Amino acid sequence: MYLKTLHLKQFRNYRDCIVDFDAPKTILVGNNAQGKSNLLEAVELLSTLKSHRSVRDRDLVLEEAAVGQIRANLERAYGSIDLDLTLRTQGRRTVALNREALRRQLDFLGILNAVQFSSLDLELVRGAPERRRNWLDSLLIQLEPIYAYILQQYNQVLRQRNALLKKYRVGAAEGKLEESSRELYSELALWDVQLATTGSRVTRRRARVLERLAPLAAAWHASISGATEVLDVTYAPNIRAEKDDPEEVQKAFLDKIQQRRIPEQSQGTTLVGPHRDEVELTINQTPARSYGSQGQQRTLVLALKLAELKLIEEVVGEPPLLLLDDVLAELDLNRQNQLLDAIQDRFQTLITTTHLGAFDSQWLNSSQILSVHAGQISSF
Ligand SMILES: Nc1ncnc2c1ncn2[C@@H]1O[C@H](COP(=O)(O)OP(=O)(O)OP(=O)(O)O)[C@@H](O)[C@H]1O
Image (tube, rainbow, N blue to C red; front, side, top):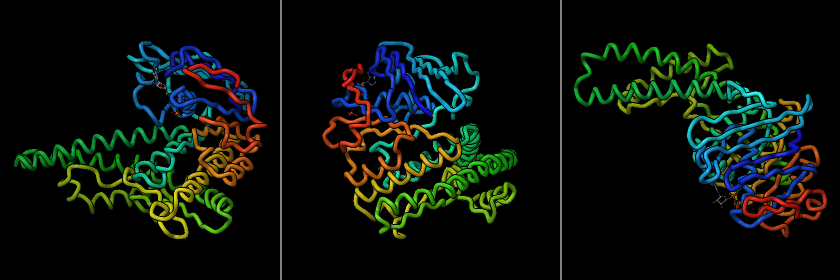
């Protein structure tokens, strides 16, 4: 797939800016706080309807404006598509494809596929388990947009079950449980089933995607590290089942809920389910977080990102975009060249940087170079 144009209107610090991409690689160069990451964020929003930097739409709209817009024209194997995302400081965002408004935002997902790589991604190795779960979920949404809906359903059930457990705990503390406990128990039993049904959909999909991603990441890691290190990416689900079978997983889920009944009630929260999953990353059988220099951790993240690119390409049937936010200059020349070899001209790549000095001349010669200054973009 190929992003041909991007039109930012009242988005972040862009008043009205059109960018035409005319090479497989585009380098956006500019000082800090000029709008480079904002541009990549716009592409990320078109891809996932989420930004890893902001949760509120009002932060995405140009200050003092009420409505912001991101428009793009994308070339896919089956034809050209216009994407439109309208953001509002008040009120809901809306999306359109080929100028036709969509009723369900879900239908907007999976049109533009992109893999983002920024320095924040080192948190994939060092950060809390939630960071890795979110990463895995974003990848799954790209591969299978319906997963966004599955995850939303699970989170809804989780919230409601937590509210009930909390009510139970407050009731117990106030000694008022006797009169309502039977009612609470039967209500909880209903939520247990819902949690197991929606949660097992999440668990099974996460297991499947990691099964495909892990060998790709291990191969990249071996290649970048010169085969001196072995990377293992392993799913450590909170619910373990013998087989990838819906009934098996649901049964394992309900059994674990039974086992954890008392601590759940005393803590007033759900202790069982994929919101407690972990993705373990080890290098030579040692946890990558405690092992390894920054350079080794960077190699690991680079291997994960290259694996994501490859997996999306396999599943979707077209190469996704690669968004490199300020990370290229941090890689040594060897790793830069590995990346260059891996993406060649197959993956359209947008790269931000504050200076061109650290770039290999191969990158510079084959790229479109644009300069970003105070929300305006011009040829370099
Ligand atoms: N809603 C908004 N309205 C106006 N300006 C905004 C808005 N949101 C962010 N900005 C401005 O955008 C700029 C930040 O741009 P961006 O994050 O893209 O920086 P950058 O060019 O990538 O630089 P760095 O190298 O520091 O990451 C800041 O000047 C910030 O004030």
